[in-house]
Image 1 (tube, one colour):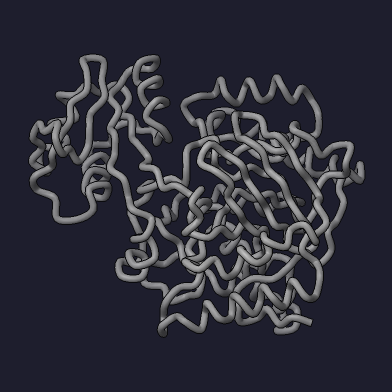
Image 2 (image 1 turned 60 degrees about the vertical axis):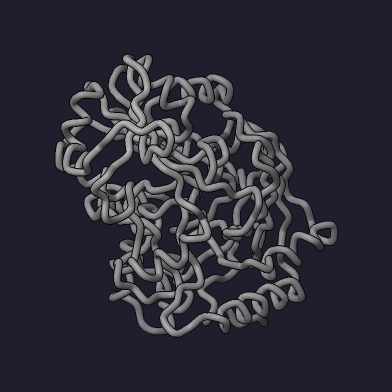
Length: 407
């Protein structure tokens, strides 16, 4: 039997809907997408039309004003789906995932990570680390949801710095030998997703060996896994485990269900994994107001090599920031926070322009962050500023599909 203890992951009893429910109605995109475009979520609700769906198991952030009522419905839906025996359990398994989007085919592996090996503190030396600033105030409401939930569905994506594709590549090459458990066209322009059960002893040994070799290349204190999406959801899972851990003995802690969290592993070097900047929109502000906010950074009009571009009704204003001593995103975000402007974070230039036009305000086109700098930056600086990059456009984010009991 494979020993996963030193590798920070392990297989789990993963739940997927039975065939009659496993269709395009079931998966929906991560709840933190389309926050200023509730019409996209409304259209998904219309299309799903009461069928079993992960949309019933999450509260999209586009509907924050409805959180209390929707949360109550989420807990009821979880119990309803379990009582109806809606799921098939893939015992002691991983799920190999192929996601087809406009950027290509992205390969991942659904696993559970060991929360004992995860830490979001900026000075962490843990095996699994956050990549962005964790806002502590955002943890309690997510912790409350987790504590009241019977099921876990996850949009967390965790990255491996595996340039030779030694971990996921061999599994994907052998997918024809694995049992395919789903192949689904996705709503919300999400493309298509396929999955294969990985439960064989040979595949488990191959995977563990590849991870062990990758880990052996690390210097002391270096990270093996970087959390790319879902930092705050994972932080809430960690908080839940820390609350439960003191009441358990050593044997109980070793395999306790709350010690683990469902995620998808993805290779940072996948050609279909593109890092996109996350743009800002300041509602109710025009370009002149934002220029005042950004004045300490010495903004100058520069269309040849702008650091950022303001997008407003009066037109685009490309700016070079002449007094920046850190990451542009960090410097700009600090001033926006200080000004206390009502902000939202938007994926995609087209979406930013549409929101600025329809809802008013001024957008800020942010610079790219090269993905090859992710692991070195997290290693050296501890973390990136929040909302520095997005792994693909909004429709390329992870869709909820697999589930796991957490009670």
